Length: 308
Image 1 (cartoon, rainbow, N blue to C red):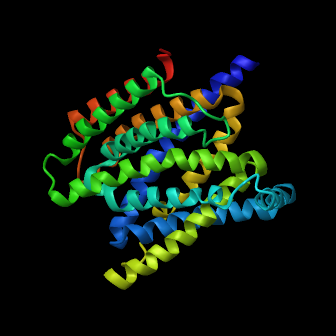
Image 2 (cartoon, one colour):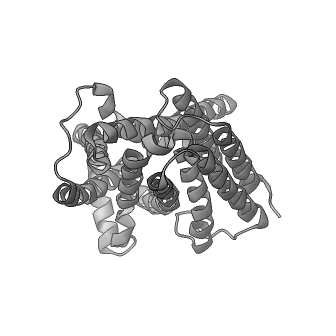
């Protein structure tokens, strides 16, 4: 039975990792339709927050765990900034809305994963997450270096025929990936106290507030976004984010944190290539994108498997 749960867990982790690539494509398309990537990010977060509010409204026990988080902040088992993971999530979704259609899903995903791996070295070193401190080993540093090389190669493929603005946009997913490790670490601490649904609800709530402010500033500078598109698929980005968080909370008990993360990243990378093939962006898919994806997978494996 345990072997079967492990196998199912790996499949679920891979599929939900691919959901992040799908979310990137959806939010990128929504940003293009609205001519405002920040407004697209706000819509994505609002839909995800609505789903979580419905879950909380239907589950009294989960609502009660919000009180446990408040108590933990009051007695300083949690500090206020550990509730701010949604800011990084908001930045990631904003980057999706601004950059995906310009640089492509594959290049965007490789940049996010590269930034996430490099940031993970720092996050683990200082013990920001609930698992405590972990040293920077040669294998982990080498894996991060390979991932960084993959980002450079994939970006060259995705941006070879683009203008200077696209090169600036290519920095956004790398920065967003760097913030993801911090987000996952502090959300993990909140999850220890309140559970995954409460942690996700706080994450989406904080991110929504940040995006409301950012959207207001964007409207003042750029004017109102275009009319809301009629295509219902463009409003599912937030739902994919919620599904990923909920599935990860279950699967981690079957496969462990490390294997969950590696399998989800593999799904995210391969999913990004498939999404680019099925629903291509203007940037298209190049050979260098594929090389970058393959190199990132090598970096993940080296960071996980090389001990010394």
